[in-house]
Length: 456
Image (cartoon, rainbow, N blue to C red; front, side, top):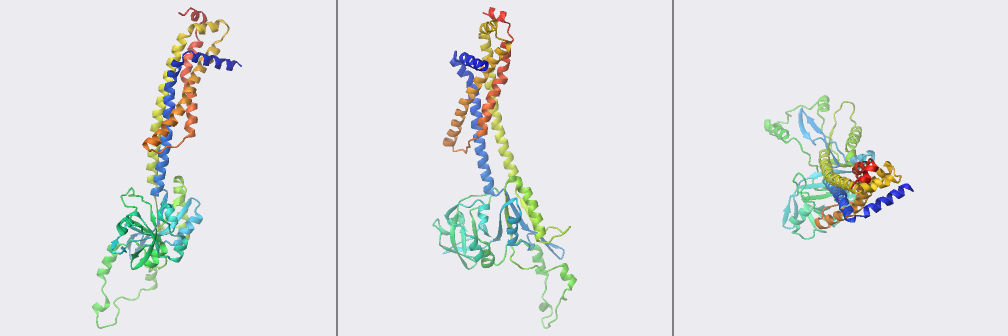
């Protein structure tokens, strides 16, 4: 009951001068509104950046074949024929940190339609999971190929916006056939536009098809990056026996022994792929996913002990770190600006409360003369300061939400409602009232009743 009376007394005191009360709370209103608006704009920007990161495939993990050595010559990363489509299935099934995985076969060849031709920047043979990995599930036209198309080596494909513009002059390519290496492939879908990536490559200059179609029907091989200088030099120095001894059947080189064959084995030909693209469940699980994939691949490829990996794993953690640090820095800067506004509002409340204590010195003395104690006076003025800040917080929340809505409508900036920011604004408002109202309340409670009654 005593607390209720103190609250009623504080409200009556604030109501005596409505204009001064409103001006006093204005600083808190602006500060809380700034906190709400900045946090919602920052949260919306963070979500937009995360969507951009997902579009770039920053959570993706790339697995390439390893380096092949023959006769002491390195043929470069990706030259070893070690990756199989089953590796992608095993990664998805046995690595808990991986949410998606897709095999990739790359090629580069001319495509023809009518009297037009074009060489795509990227021709990718893969599975439907690749579209989800690259955030291409929503098609601009038509539909994507299916797992059944992959199984049946169906002669179908989807093309990017650049292919549509260059080959079909803006017409719909759906149902039309393009020719790749004298193989007619039907266009069943058009990818939505993405534009250039952060490396400057045109992401729309692409043809996607089932990997079995690219591998077995179109090119007949993968686009492995062999050591061209080594192979060219070997070809230039090789002399056929018929050129040296044109009229004899003698062989120039002896048949290699079993030891020599074991030291430099001939590559095994099987349904290999150029790459596997996997996606971690989140940015924090990328490192775990890399460890799981490494362990699984070594087991599947029968690599024991100190044997080097016959594959290479790359991730884009640097992109994630850069984007995350940028987002965190921006959010913190916005929050600091908003907190400065709250501090300014708190200083304004302290000044007004000090003025109020001075104006009501005789009232304080009178209350003390009829029995009020110092703690009672302290609680009354502290309650007034907290009520002022809470009122400012309530109006500030409304103003902040309205500002966020206006920014989204007028500027078309992404925003997102932040319940945490609203709760924090209320808590901070009450804290500001306690912190900045304590000194005026303490000063009022320390007044001498006799001196207060004599104050003019």
